Amino acid sequence: QVQLVESGGGLVQAGGSLRLSCAASGSIFRINNMGWYRQAPGKLRELTATITSLGITYYADSVKGRFTISRDNAKNTVYLQMNSLKPEDTAVYYCNANILVRGGYSGMDYWGKGTLVTVSS
Image (tube, rainbow, N blue to C red; front, side):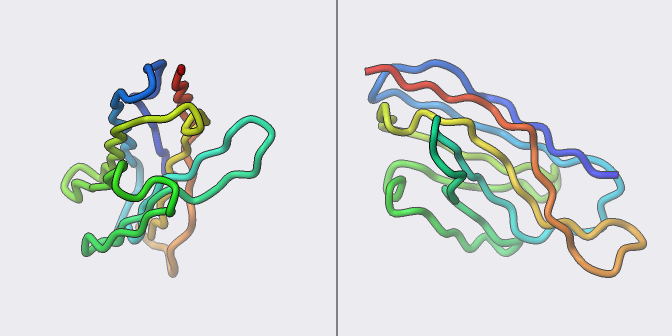
């Protein structure tokens, strides 16, 4: 099977930076889109940023210009560099990847367990 494991969350002051990582492992044939979602307390999970296998990126308006998503296809890893963090960025950040497993017929969405980012004012 496939696992996504996030790392890099923590507590940071407003204006600071954090870098999240998410590594995919298991019986992987190909990884298509990868992305980060976040869920703040009392709110629905929302898309933060995505990146295709060719490196085309998309950002939510709320993080555009402050966050950068990237991926290392050789390591099956996606990153989220978060700069100029604000208290409203506080959330659990989840990694998502659409993965075609060996012997599979189509890609399926997989999720990590999440990593908490807390931004203090």
